[in-house]
Length: 378
Figure 1: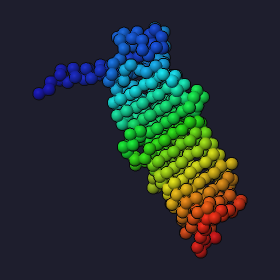
Figure 2: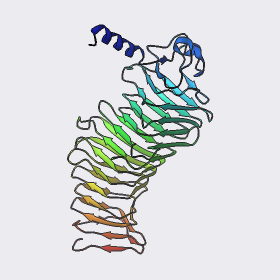
Figure 3: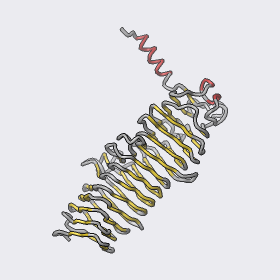
Figure 4: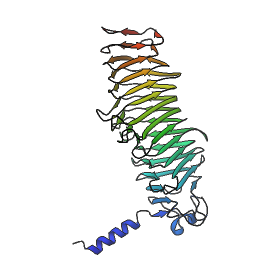
């Protein structure tokens, strides 16, 4: 029989071993200085680490900076309570192998918890684990490489990728084993992924490789992906889910977003909201719009349908500027709003107005050697 005292001892031991090493920043910001860690010793491989500025910082209270390859590989790393970690420089790299890397601002109303990767640094997350940016925390990739075997999970947090300090690249599901997605979830505040420059590849395999998860509070908060100069390729399906009045938005303002899998809201419980104001949005599979859904286009922008697929529209396609180009074989179905500005059928493209009753074109209709079939429609 396991006695109460044994259980108590086990619980105490478990609690004490939750974070084998705490960052203190007692002397300076040097990640490799033992004096900056609890116990005065460097962590070892497979340790669980905590960076918590409120509870554990002492002395100079310096935030850690990694400027070379970390000599130890933590099993788990958590940053919270205003802690800040910077991985900076082409020689700098960190690998987390075993459990999730979590940046969490949940307990930090007066602080901002953050992770920054800059000047050619590299962060790798192995063992099919995630990078989680939560509850007001911020991750900045300003020049470097982020490789994750599973998910980039932005849950009421903010992720910004640009190239202010050098080229930037993100790859998810790096093992290509069917696990890995970009998930943007809003519950108690806005949640944002902004790609202002650089490149991102989400390898195919997971059930949904872009997952937009609404707030369940009638659009009170936004879950937003904004492409503002980067090149982003999603090889798998894109899903919008939760409530039909959610604010789950994908913006394409410049750069390009290529969606190679089907794009749709979860049936009866999500809202697809895609807004193209610049750059290029590319569809490679089926696009489905339910009554609450909208694809809107303005500005000097392009929307391209490049492969064989259908647009099933019971919602609104409202293109008041820019050009929509059909390069593959596309079937237009159902009687939502079909409003295009400039419509172009590329050489070899096939556009079938199968069950779409009326398609409106306010600008130029251009057929560059493709095929158009209106059937009995207009």
